[in-house]
Image (cartoon, rainbow, N blue to C red; front, side, top):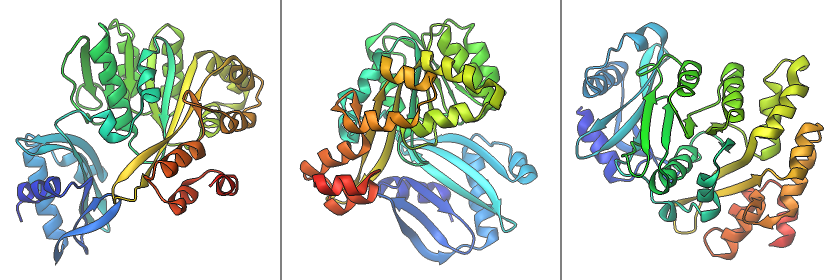
Length: 351
């Protein structure tokens, strides 16, 4: 089997991911549904052969980290086809991989369904902006569009710290420095601390994974930089709780005060199926107002959901309001709206 042919076919079919797993034919995910690339079940020698071909395409990358630890993440480009983000791993003693297909070209916000209320977060000049949601919900695409807006409209120094690099940004009005964890730098924490000495205006932090990364990110946001990052949470209140709960109990009150001062906005998103057969993002947006700042500081975080749910402005909008707008525009069905709603009973009444 030729991996170049398989990846080209996946790109042609509009696949988001390609799955190379023993015991199953080569598969890909298109619009959220699994399709087979061919009908032949893979055996362990097949998956190892395909994965070794991927490592050769990635500038003959050393496969030792995968064989030694059982996991590896990297990205590479196939000339004339696409970029790919690869996660290789061991399962049941055999090698396996999930390959994310990434376009050479930056996504068009209009085609992606990303509105001006999201893109306007590029105008934030200091503090912390979070884009949250489950894996595969399009967080990286949303952040890429925001970074491209900064790059296109401001004369700044933008630093992106990613594991691995996904979309590649050309220098436009701004200078864009893109660093890949484990290739260009040792860790998120090391790179983030170094970035503060590199005259940044905006920093994209691929993921706030742990206590130390979150702590350094909040400190950076306090020093007058804008930090854009992601968390695997749904909803503004859940996101704030997750950040505070990472810290030891004796530090949580101080962290809540610090977070209330640096947090500027939380965007939560899901990808939902459309009537036409594609998928479109739906957003919850929470912009930090003085009232919400007080709720964070005074540990009244559950009240935040009520504030967001009762608002219908573009700057403060619940997930259910976004679903309702898509339904009224004829983009999604009632059933889809209710399936992805945070409060299905209330949304059912509005529908």
